Length: 254
Image 1 (tube, rainbow, N blue to C red):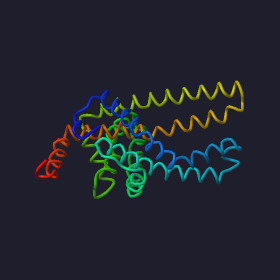
Image 2 (tube, one colour; image 1 turned 30 degrees about the vertical axis):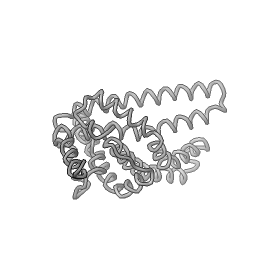
Image 3 (cartoon, rainbow, N blue to C red; image 1 turned 180 degrees about the vertical axis):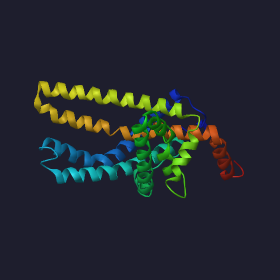
């Protein structure tokens, strides 16, 4: 995709664009996911096959801590890669990880805040929790891509961007969750069949399922980063702003 394609998009166009971005940048996105979540995933699998959490509580705890750190890194890095790709630019694996390392605190704080608000909403009447998740659908994108005074300001910014489009965010959440659920269920069936036919195939089947789940991070980033730019184009004429910047930076004879 290039910058001239910045325009309002339907749900179908966002999903199609997300899969296109994922396919075109699969190498770097999957590398980020493996680097950030590979070790905690491997530790988790080892603990599972070696007796469970009760037997290896220390390793299990280390895996959980590394998983949180990896989540913060993979989230920021994948949003960075997807954003640069969508705007017609490129970024390297190292650049994405370095950029994400400076956003970890903001992603953590905003994520905790959104989680608490959504949890409170679900405890009350469920519907407020769903509304909260939709209203804060692009919080991570705001934290990563914008310079705010406080990471908690990202909550208000996301709520403002999604005003009038929370239904769109809900549809994207629903489609994404159904798609990922079908993928996981499909591999779950494969694991069950492998275990029934030959127990020795259980380990590679579970490892394959774990590798597939690593795609959750880049796919989610693709979908909601495109939603973020869709909302900015609709509400702030971001496409015209970017075009004016490019014209200003262009050589006089261009």
